[in-house]
Each structure stands twice: as structure tokens, then as C-alpha cells.
Length: 75
Image 1 (cartoon, rainbow, N blue to C red):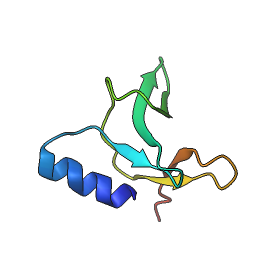
Image 2: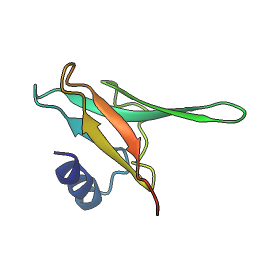
Image 3: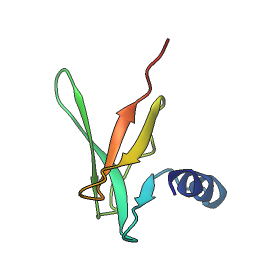
């Protein structure tokens, strides 16, 4: 479902990334920055959602059906 959401966002001109899990729940990607790290997390709140960062992809936890952001392994 993630690819569909990215394409929909491109067509609609929005930059926020959303993910719909197997239960049909929509989750929005957010970030929190500290001095030396950036924490990415999903919430059901669309307000202040961010686009999917470059070199990241989303998988769904099989037990909880929650989306998890993963970084692509380069090389």
C-alpha cells in the first residue's frame, strides 16, 4: 500500500507520507530531531506529517500491524 500512497501524494501535490495497514488504519510519518539524531515515527495524526525520507522504506510489523520505517542498506 505504501507505493500507492506515494503516487497519490505526487498526484495530489501533498508531501506528507501515509501508510494504510492491513486493518485499514491510516498512519502518518513524523520526525523528532535532537542534537545528534532524528527519530522517525508513525501516528494517526495527519497534522505536521512529513514526506518519506530518501533511502527509507516502510514494512508492517506482523504481530502489531504497525508500520516501521527501515533504512535501505547501501552497497
